[in-house]
Length: 121
Image (tube, rainbow, N blue to C red; front, side, top):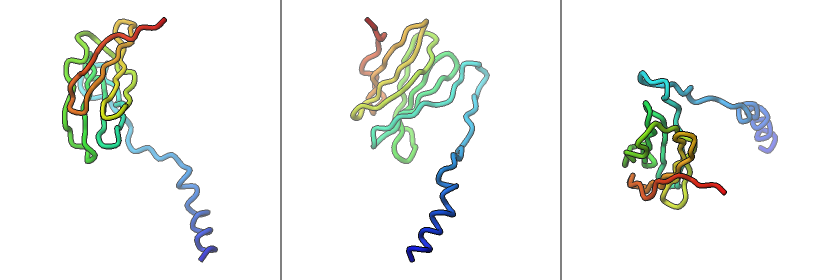
């Protein structure tokens, strides 16, 4: 039994160590500003952020991948998503506008709780 288990491990090790891409991100629509998604999870929901046209978009999804909510009006000017992370049940979305980094706190229901520039120094 131990011998067959070791043999199975040796045979599958190349598959375990190999990176296998799920899909190649592609831009959709006509804008040159479309970007692939950024994803974060709180453990119970997911936040997905992406660039669509000149504006960033954030959607909150349940564990099955169904959209629960969408945060709208994150930026009132051209903006570029930088990162998204979870803290508790909320998410922090970092985006860039006119060489400024901004942070939006987005609740699991899509409500924007705060949205302001990040100040350094």
